[in-house]
Image (cartoon, rainbow, N blue to C red):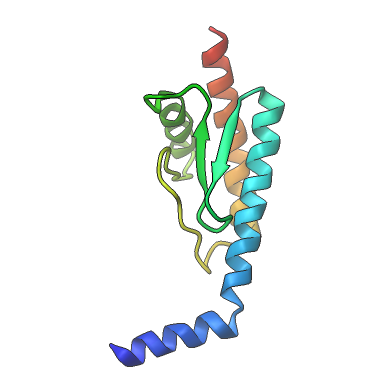
Length: 116
């Protein structure tokens, strides 16, 4: 077990994993904020960039967040609507950009539901 832990730490250090987590988290966070603003949906984002938490304004029962996440999941992007999420070394800029294509549609769904 100790050897596995040391090997993991070696990979994290040699791959500059902490910087990667932060960059991918910030890419996701910035994209989500741009989309929310464009669709007129108010969100807050907390936690470090690599552990994003996205919450919707005026959503005490998390129903707007649940609608958003369910819509994203229909298109293969799994997010959580009330807990911090965890990025990994496997997440690439392409993965984040794909997720953002999906979340743009999910924000549209939330915005349309609020308009009715």
